[in-house]
Length: 179
Image (cartoon, rainbow, N blue to C red; front, side, top):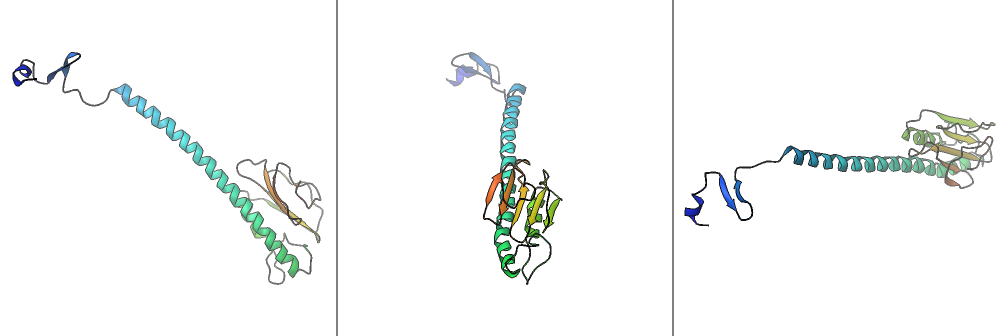
């Protein structure tokens, strides 16, 4: 367009090829556009936060599993130091300079914010209560179980028989294996 043609319009207006005249000083976004963008950002952030929470729960589950799995090796050291007996492996006392597995079970419970750890040393024990971590022992075996954070009705269970498994069952009364 020539300069002479542009002067025919009032200041702030230009000629567009399709619609004739448009306002040149229109700037910014409309309220609808802003609300749509805010809604999209809100939806995306809720998806990210949901994924973050799932990842956090999986990390807690891994910490529970790691704490209890490490206790298997500790229990075998305790067994050797305790004249080939698992008696009191769940207790707090060390034998022959070798610590028991109580600290690992307590750490597994703490991951889920559980303060309750039930220990039965050389004694008959009841069924594991839901949402508690347990450690049961006698002279020939031991079992330890703690709930996972992703589902407090799912447990990670390890035992002196070499088991390390996820189970939906609590430790049965007087049992020293994962069910």
